[in-house]
Length: 413
Image 1 (cartoon, rainbow, N blue to C red):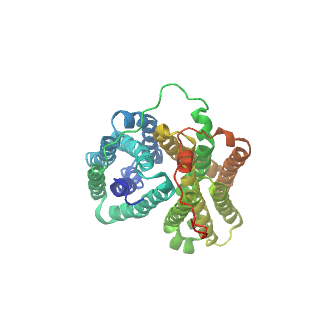
Image 2 (tube, rainbow, N blue to C red):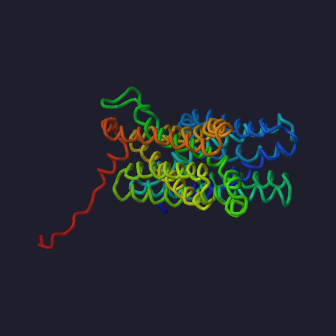
Image 3 (cartoon, rainbow, N blue to C red):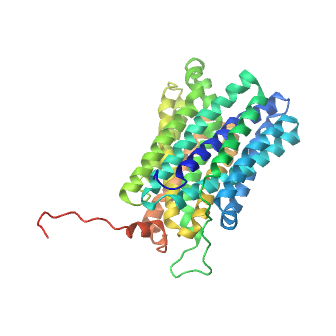
């Protein structure tokens, strides 16, 4: 895995790019509030960012075929970070929304390109671990960047954060220059015998990651506040680190899930266990908040949810790579990222609406029900939909073609 050309520069570039994104994620909405704008405008900065992210993700596979990974990722890293300098000009509504939208374009292209590039660079037998390692670098970047941005605001002010994010993103752009100059494979014209419509192949993995991402939208938005509301004393100790606990569990289990997939030679073994863990975590959150149990139970809930979400992230991405032919790696990455990002955004809005009317416990109860829908879909797919996997030029068939040395019987020639 580590010897694959361009793998290490890709990881470093992704770490820097997501670090720049994480620095600004909580800071820009806070800057909007400090400038006297409403909570609606503050939320709109993230909403506009996510909208342009998803719109760009739709177009990225075509750009990867036409232009190639290297220039797309360089431009994406540049667009993700440099517009942060625009916030130095003004804190008016137009500036907050415009530069958030520009950064979303860079983020959308980068997220699709980096996931697809891993599948292009790394041998198929190491793809599970490589995808898991990508999750580790993303997770560490977020664990460092999210609190660091808020700390820098309090210590040095907003301008310092904007400049730092731009510089870190430029580091990502420089590292992208070291990525091999390859393009996504062109799609063959026409349809081969036995091919299945793409949406049938990716629907269930996309639904699995989407339902947990919707829950993550509520967890990331409301859990720190819910912890403080439940226990102001203990909540002050663990409230600020709950998201880091969830992120850490997600990183570890995502990598372990990839190792399991590589060991057995196929994706999917830890998908349902991951979904069940995620369901148990968010259901425990709802129960703890409804019953007023000790706030420390929420730590366990966070570990369960984060670990389960990490496993599902990896299994869903590998499952899409496995189900689709090699020529649609970039489409698989795009669908996975859209399911993740759209789920996070929609979940924040819908479950926020529920929380306003049925408290935090009600929001997490609905979130658990949403995850249960994803589990049901995966179970039904295992029972009824195994025939949907294409048998043409996908990762599973290529793994079968790898020669395996035979063990000696000890009986001589």
